[in-house]
Length: 199
Image 1 (cartoon, rainbow, N blue to C red):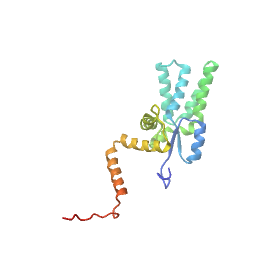
Image 2: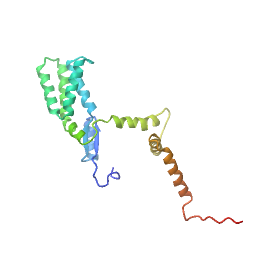
Image 3: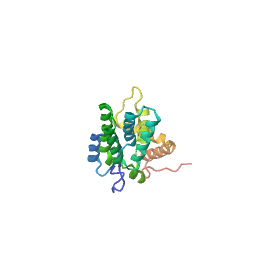
Image 4: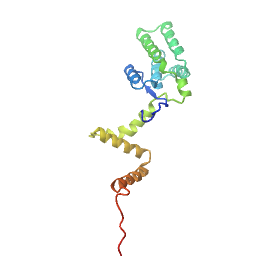
């Protein structure tokens, strides 16, 4: 990362699932990085809360989630948490349902500093990791994890580089560059001399 940003001018973003151990490791490895709770994980928790009150697949559950997800995206996490906590005490819920609602509220509250989605979006920062996960699957898993394959770290690194070039449709340009570099390595300029042809 230091090679990519030697002057420390870039904003480093880590999108994660809210796992505490990952937050600690990120803070150590990337001090100053913006840590974002993947919006998908936040919305999954809101779905759990919706199903406390409404059946799965119901329009009411969808509306419950839509309203709260929009408020979360607008930076109103504290009010969503407050509302869930009020619902847990105002409604006559079984202890299991009340516990679910409180757990959702706790999760959102504990992660609220990583849920400033309105700010992240204004700054052009990612709020979900799906595109990165998809790229990893396409770039790495589809090629590297086939049946019976074993890779050394060096071999895997080389294969991933070639696959990235191929998937970016840069293979022809890369191959021309590779051949040129190999010719220069084998026949460096100034190290050999062409003799004139004798007639």
